[in-house]
Image (cartoon, rainbow, N blue to C red; front, top):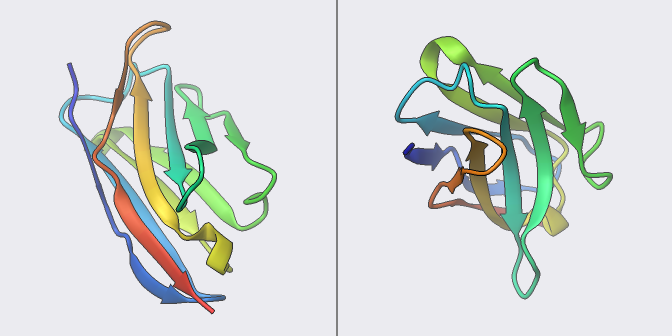
Length: 116
């Protein structure tokens, strides 16, 4: 079992930046995959970015070049640096962790609102 706590959300103007953090309750060193997802108003939850245990990253086309995912195993935290934010990035952002190929866990989410 692992608990995930997201933080760093808030209200920002278009073009601004935010950094989200996802703190895990135990070591993330061996977690095979950690990712950020988002769910906008009236939309389905979608993948934003993920990072493997070896550091390989993958991004949704809509955020490529603007968002960067990273992980710091020393403090059991995954980050999402979001730059050049757009109103369409407004959503609740969730952290997800895969401890193996079957078990995965979600955080409670953090709200990001981008005003135009």
